[in-house]
Length: 393
Image (cartoon, rainbow, N blue to C red; front, side):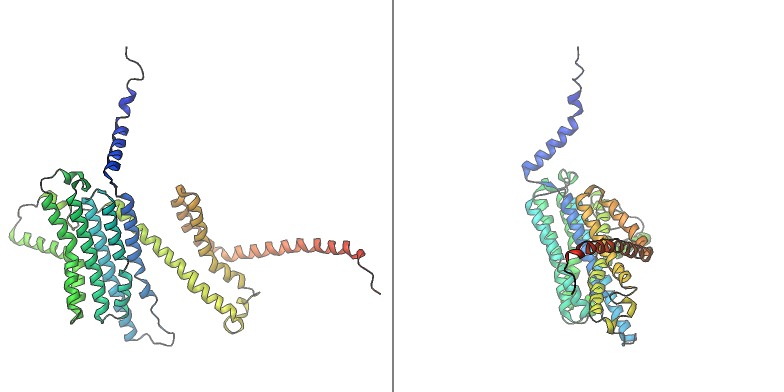
């Protein structure tokens, strides 16, 4: 007779196989790349977002007229920002395609990825040079050299991963066309850096060609796709490419990883919210503090200390930073509800701004009531102590 407990080991085969896979990865010194890719996506989204700071902090005095020179300055800075933002997103897309090929990482691959991320962190500095001095070759040259260094490190990642096939995607490990894969991925990774190398050379004597070549680094995949479509229309359909080649091509037919796109987008939204908070905390609070120090000269009587609008102004400036700090502290202790806390803050802050004047008046009324309750108690204590004092002569 069969025992009732005999089928139980069969139910754990999948768990045992998963545990066995983890043990094998640990024995090989490799692990999955999910956390490293999340870190890379967050860093790339930060770099792509903070490059707007030199544009937003363009100094325009109130006495200066908004003439053609100011319009040209702003248009140049916005155009340079858009181009560099797109270049960073192209580098992120190449990074995404690259790690569709690489399935696991070891210590060397993690260090190479960190070197790539460290090189990317130099892009905002070079971008600020380009924005401040758009016609000077130094900013263009340094930006192009950073892009070249990023492509070189990504090429090293490709070479190292194909040198040790156990790091590759399981579909590629058993493929007989690994050399074809490697050549194709290197072509994708180095396409932009080669154009930036030419742009760095042209920046020394003809900088407009440099901007044109950097723009081509962004739009070249789409131009090649349009050219192939026109060729297909003119010459007729040709033999379809190998499925393995289509898998990692930089065109719109093969979608990017949904998780990485979501991580990159969440990073951009988080950094934009952080920049807004920093702008409120640093600039508006600094302006408010300086105005309080020179109240009679800079503030209206109602906004000065003790005035009718003073508490409302302070609450309006402190609401967003205090709410953000409260949300951050809450997510530290309640990490499971971090998304719900973030959405609750997004809903609560605009509502609090609408009801802020009423809330401030209620808080002031409550404070006055508490003061009124405390004063009689003090008067009673004085009456009790009065007989102990010597009588006046």
